[in-house]
Image 1 (cartoon, helix red, strand yellow):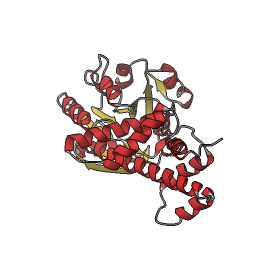
Image 2 (cartoon, rainbow, N blue to C red; image 1 turned 120 degrees about the vertical axis):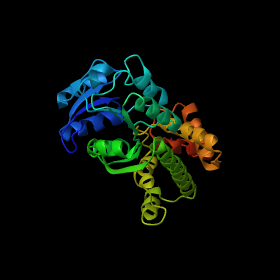
Image 3 (cartoon, helix red, strand yellow; image 1 turned 60 degrees about the horizontal axis):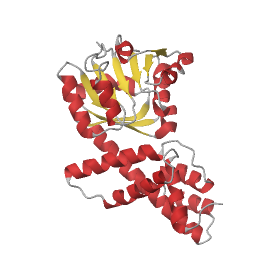
Image 4 (cartoon, rainbow, N blue to C red; image 1 turned 90 degrees about the horizontal axis):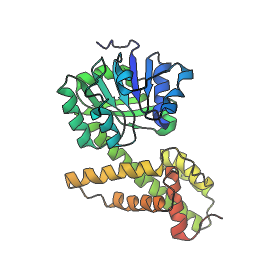
Length: 300
């Protein structure tokens, strides 16, 4: 049984940009973390920080109170759940699985049912806050699933985030995350348009950004990504490719619920333009390069 507010054993599956920092924060909080990744070198890089490394998923969860997943897309999560070495046949000892990836809400609901049938609690708990939020343990975590499972998970989630909210039944966490990504994508697009217009009129963009941050147009995206757009910094935090994946899931959810999302469709086409120009590995702020091309004011 999971002991509330006591250190536990965490099997962490998926040691990417976000997962690495989240696993480290769990270890810093006193939990014993066992890491697994399909790329062994990714998990092994945590060994120097006191994190144990497992060769298989089954090995990772043998003594775990909870298995936490942080993976790129729906098929990756489904493979970890349903694969021959997966959690459906090899559940953690504590009978709790938390998926912190961003995946299709329908898939989350199916996984919930299938794990419940073998006596395992499942929470979909995607996050917002990006690599910096992961590093600083300041993620916003939106959780779908049973309230009782949420209470069991809260102690682990608090090691990774500061805003931890139970938003409803299974799949609700993923739906809220997709709404978050919809807003983020359109916000980034709006910032790109404002910067392109200001630049064309000869306005100093740093000055304009400072003014906008003091008014009703202020946002986290303008503060963080706007600075990078102006500087021409396309370094990857949250990548174009990952936002495209999330926007695909938004469109899928919109079709299933018959909700028109015209602004989302437009920004998705611009992300596709960025990918078509080889920019999929760049950070989200690289959407501004699409506006460089459209306005004919590209950087030298």
